[in-house]
Length: 282
Picture 1 (cartoon, rainbow, N blue to C red):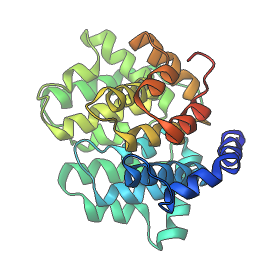
Picture 2: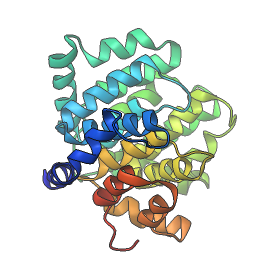
Picture 3: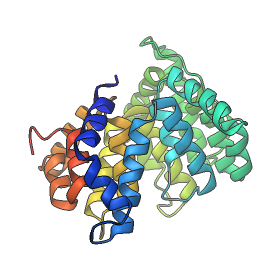
Picture 4: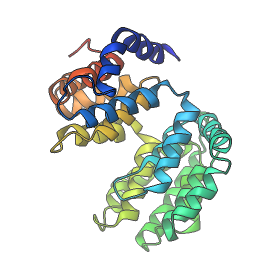
């Protein structure tokens, strides 16, 4: 699991003189401060152990939670139960308080209700499903969404406690029984930030590769690369499911992720990303 982190360390041993010259201001580089910030961040994130990295990212996110910052959802819903538990323990050790209390302190209303439940979760990880339960809970979800009770206790209970396999079965029943995916019904008001959060929750729990592909696509294609999102996805998924994300990116965009990064980034930052993503199809 430490293979990619070792790649980063080898890369920096090889390029440390150049990097230090940039950071110390000894050579002229366009947007030097931006280069320094971006490079420091990717090195910092990737060389942390995953629980410490998730704790760090979650703490950042509690302080600047916005409609375009779903880092808490990523940590809560794309990690395994053991990984999320390890991140909560790392949060205790580093910040001397719990992730749950910080999330509760920095959010309000429906956002707090959903997010605290998600970051507190410890889901069963097995593949077993209960088809009868899936059908009945698909009906519950449909009823709550039809009533626009998007923060109902039952809806939040299902999303925050069911295993990912069970939840996938439930959402398949929802699609089959009601003629469309649940995410379509959660687009009743496209500008509603809480509904955006619910849609992100569904994607992160059931198809994280599609969630991260879209995040990368938006980060790369926007006017001026969103380095924070690009760095975070590559650093956190390199040892997990980056292969599936790359496949989804190519399926959706007909261009390899490494090629898109190569066109949109430059210098040592580009080299670092390509090293982590892999250039075999660039």
